[in-house]
Amino acid sequence: MNEHEEIFTRLREIEKRLTVLEVTLWGQTGENGLRSDIRDLKGKMDMLLKFFWVTTAIPPLVVAVLGVLRFLGKL
Image (cartoon, rainbow, N blue to C red; front, side, top):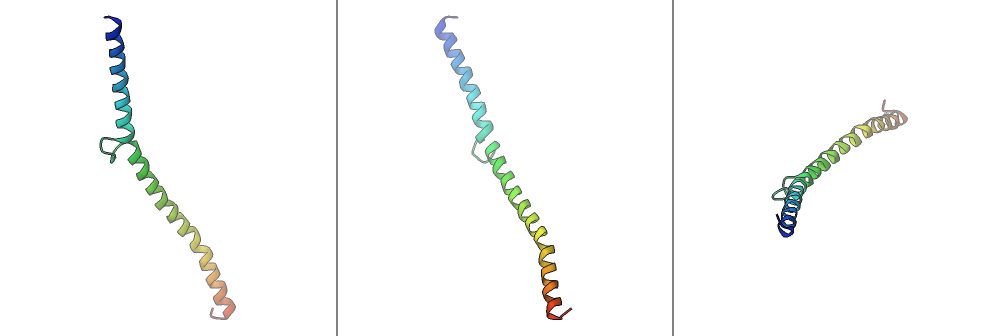
């Protein structure tokens, strides 16, 4: 093999690796691949954080409402 063929072979291998990396990261249409998986994970984490925010906010609200009702003499 002469030098030019070896260089072209190496360039082709690098291009294949870059294509594999690009498809892995971005997917074929942008709807698959790591980017979309990260987007899906972000949405799920946002929903989970909202759930925890609501569930941790309920007990103090109940205590506050009971305190106000007791103060007003309704309990």
